[in-house]
Length: 557
Image (cartoon, rainbow, N blue to C red):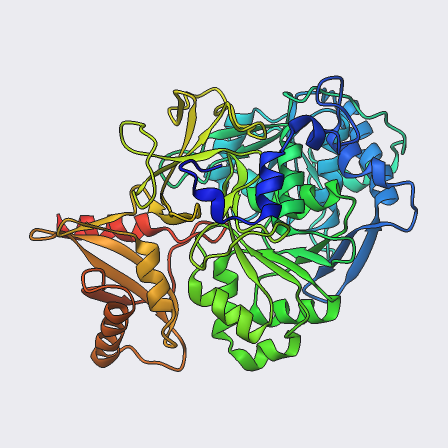
């Protein structure tokens, strides 16, 4: 909870849940025990499998093929997978890397790994051989599970482990000599395998940071993180029994794995898996045809939905009950547009691979919503704003968002795998993100510490400028950086993706400049523009401002 008495503006519901948060009570919602033994497969599958009709996964691909899998079917399939692992000498604590698209095999592999007590390592399907090699070197995985489409990426990986390949989706390339035919291996396994009990501090996931500021670091995720994942689904996502839930995020990354796979299954709720490239058309179509009521994803997807216009949105207006956004700050214009054209509240949520989600506008709790704010600390987290000397700051003072470890019973991150963790010391975990505490207690995102622009003595958050730009109908996406300048230290430069109906002209550039000046302030408007076809992004969709900034620094040298 934020300090300074600012929480007085919060409603009784949020305040009551936050103040009464008890780790033992929350952990008691799990089937197993963090102290005497717990298994992630039991939590996400077995405990819900007694009802033979209870669907766990609604799967569909871009060709229209569909498949529903029940918890009972997943229980049996995970047992076969666990027996397969045991037969290959994989024991509790060993790592198993999985590089698959959004297919049922991915969920079966994850559940089977957890059933056996092993550790699941996700691999994003857009990774190349060097990214794969670095992550396998970190994990020392004993086995890789992939599909024929991604199998060639391992050809140039030094010291690659044994590889099991799934059945080709559409025929074609067969299993290579030396690889394991996963379907054939599983077909001869028993559907009985006693889940291996582990301790709450034992890890069940090995994630990687994004690597935007250096080589990716291994993030061990212990089983006690399940308490945090469950709380987010309940308090922030507000996943309810009657919802049809779809998290667009890829399970090769934290938000997709934590909250498209683990989170809903923890609650005994079905999840929607769509195996196909993102497009506005397929998104609207799936919302309509599948009856999606609870949607989660990144602002990039939502901005593209806006760019398609209100006529397309009208086909699903009123269908959605909740929409959640994570990965980067949510522009205020997106909030207003979704309310007007989709008749649904969209809430900004903040988190990291190392934390899960920790600051949210909670759909499931009553509290004041301020557009442009990331919200309040999730129950179980105590967050503060620190200055450069690690002093706790009060309202309206930019600083680093930090988690007070001792006062955060739901906190699970203890450090990177086999590496120093300089962000953890003095009782705090420092996120590296610059925020402000509002007098109301809300947390407002300013930017990554290295994204903040210093111009003529002003500190300018790129998010504010980007939000102002995106309110203009000509702008689909924008990224704002500080360009080195001998007089002002930096000037604001905007990289803008235009709506197809607009052309890049000096007149439009001046119009956008005036728009930001009028909308934001006289000192924070872009002095330079670059109209581009696309913006550099991480594989998970976050804008990489540092790529643009580094290019400007190089050009100025």
